[in-house]
Length: 213
Image (tube, rainbow, N blue to C red):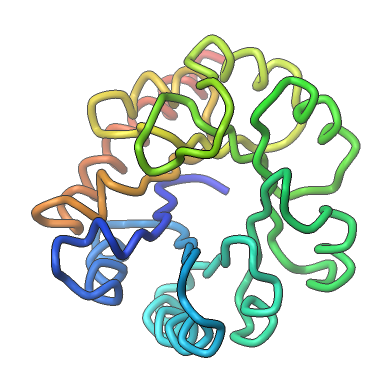
């Protein structure tokens, strides 16, 4: 799991359709898309997920579903992201199968320790910085918290929360293997350009980090 990971929020799309924003993000180089819908009825959610999957499939970009395993199974998503209050990882893995991508949010150090023995595909470090798009989380980890998790965990880290082009480089240097972005893409004037700029900054930092190993 590396690169720019779009997490959708239809309320931030500035009047554009969610599908249009997803399409532009993929054009800009997004490597993964997570469909997050807290208020959409199940049927509409499944229909939307199938439409997004059709956009992503030709580019081999995986579709992740936030929380809703029923929707993930119904649309044949590549994986699911679960939080600490969602379905337990072990149950999610049993339902989704061994090939599914499963990500788990970690909001406290106890979460990080508990995740060490889990066969998750990545940890969502949430939030790195304070952000209005995630209001139900604990205190931000900050860059030092991200470094601490990187030193401890064996899993790839997906950083989320307040990520933008301004801080993408330092977040990568602190240990993120992937940047999960919401408003910096969904609310951008040009989501394709915003994604490409984020990807460039992140790739440069990752290259420097890997060279220093």
